[in-house]
Length: 200
Image (cartoon, rainbow, N blue to C red; front, side, top):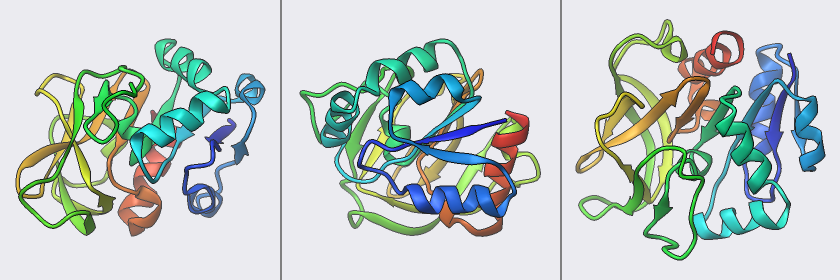
């Protein structure tokens, strides 16, 4: 199994790779779309602004190949901004569209301090291998100013409270996304990454 971590110039790549290394799972940083054909699983990390990140994805030639990867239901994990790009758009960059793989949009927090930085609980429901061995209400590390507003369809696997209840985990088929940073979330985050790498 070979895991690729997409490098489009806007991601926390090293910490993600270090987490996989710690787990004994082979991963590599991918800086060319041609490398995707060599991979079994794909991680899209990200920090920064939505529009800038989408633009960098397009400029680097990754946007269309990653979109195809999603449509083919190949194993995928979006982290933080990589999670937000799975949706239609963001108020942060209304003229730039995400992958639109899931229905929903990103909106700025209005009720609490921005950005949300620190540990927060993720309430999960139903059975999903992604959270195997992780109880509902476990805490993960968040850093973000925008949240995903989406319905309660089957894609929603977890929610978090920060002045309101928002979607923090999604999944459909082999495609998953998390708003938090599992690579910075201690044992719970490592368990989630291991679950994704070996079971999802």
